Length: 330
Image (cartoon, rainbow, N blue to C red):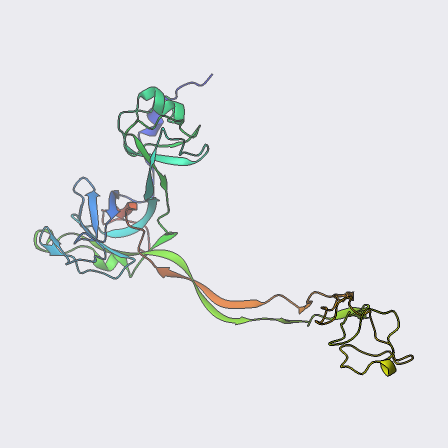
């Protein structure tokens, strides 16, 4: 039996060697078509701006204009000052793709789905296709499908499948502590922080085949027996022995070397040439043989600043020290 666990009083304190740790959490959606490069910034007012690359005219917010950084960078402006930057972490929420009916046998059991249109499906229907008990169906709820959804094709409810943000990590650009303690928050805002989103890239080099293909070879004897029938043009009736010496007309065919008789028999009717019969090869042709090692492809794998996929939701938390007494050496 599972027992619901509560949080005891030992959860009231957070012990650290930092005198005044201050965590600032924020989320936003990557939206290059917006003038700020992002939408839906949420931070309870602790973050003034997040600027990313935009494909349109850079916009302004709270008196600051987006400098339109190159794709892959984000410039973050806080509303507070701090004394020291300590650390941070980031999580990515994958965007979605497609619009799939939940009652048209279009789903796949075991596949992850996200509700994108709540529609008119009942709670029972949502639970039947995989929404966990106790979870209220809503846009954004994710689940693993239990069935293909079944037939019917009458509901307006829709789901999508997840794609990926394409990002594997975030790096801090520059030295954060040099962008703190603005002389005037009112006129200059708070601390600034520049980050870059990282993704692996592969640059291909030379492609070198490392071997050769042998030419096909024929193994066996020459063609088998090849016979021809022929007709004497303008000549005589069919006969079993037709000696050249007794015939004065033109001959189609080949003489035997020994008795000078025609190879083949005369046609019962004169005129026309009978087509030759097909020969039969007596052997086999080998397949080409590759000699050598596999082909090689050289290149360079590296990390590069890359824009997260449009629609990715970025969640970040940065920890600063707000006191003048901090870790030795900072």
